[in-house]
Length: 511
Image (cartoon, rainbow, N blue to C red; front, side, top):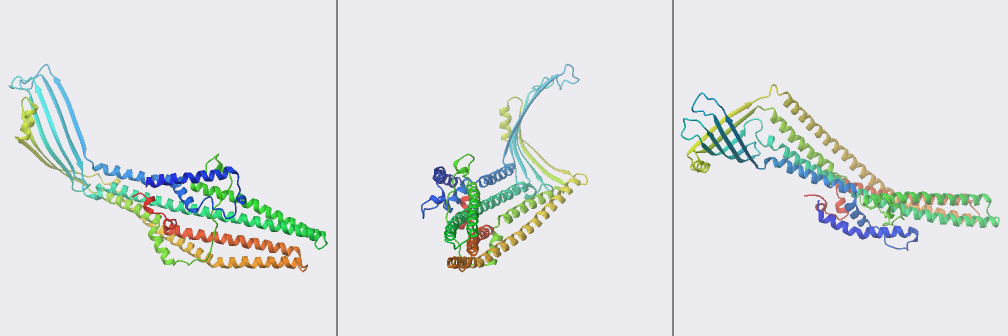
């Protein structure tokens, strides 16, 4: 993970956090803001805050680091290993049957060296050893002897344990696991970006809906005053006034509900940004403003292009490909386990001997005064190989299972892409119709109001025209939001959310 980017984002967001806190503690409401004031949270800063503070993002960011340690752990099996051993033994016997054996002995030995494993199963070790023997045997002139050697030994499996399939399976599996964790992290990044942007535009939609509700309340207040005045002069009835009052009460109820939804939408956005804190002003304060929601028909991208890009960029497919690689490594290792074990063992040593000094014994060994070598074969075969065959069968079934799951993911992705494309196509077509409907309802409301003022229409028709206008405006607003949501879905599926927000994948994903 790119730590400098994480630190710079946290530093840049400190001012944003303080600014939002100051707004919330001041008690300033949206309707009190000066007209044309810039939004408290631009979309770019909301995205930056989410990438710096979102808990799901931060938690998932640790998975690749954990998986990288698994690679180190698996590769450490091939690191050189130092070893050393030492022993001391003494014995005494009061009675002996041979003058050459003695009644007491003192044996000391030690050895040290280095061993290393290789990818083909080869195990190579180099060591040196010293054996010191002393006894009180009466026949020998000197009962003390020093034996030193330098040796090199090799063990090479010829059947089971031979080759990279058997010895690198764990490393290959860990590497594929790291790839899978990176793809899972990329999936979380895309979902964080998509969820944050959806929450942002949902807050914008409700922000504008509240403005529409308040405007409708102003109209309802005006109609009520007109109804009361007309009743005073005998041009309206008490029923008209009651209808106007009921209409105003309904508009107030709509404002109350919209404000509740607006608060929940603000919490959702702030939670996605990682800025909501229990007991702080951000958890209980006023609603910060966001950019206005716009919408217009846009060119519909070609479905084949979207599908090809989604198939190449989908993190779930890439993650599943890595899982399949893991299962293939496990299957190759299990296939190796059903072979008999046949190992070639080779060793050679230079030997030096002296009857008193260990240094002299080592010098003699270095001068190659003596040598020894060994060659051998070791064979073993478990009876019936029941466990090994069961392990191989299980590995093959798991590989088949993951391959089928990949096909299922491909099918699901195709359905999601086609559904998102159809939604965007339908919304683009309905957006113009929704705008025309608003224009029609505005004209209808003006016409009904004029007819009522002229006495050729009833007050109920005016209220119904106002209600239809309000519903048309809210439907248009919802259509604009749906258009943005569909675009976000397609960008999420194709992995283009990085470019959509001017982000670099290299900054966010580990190498």
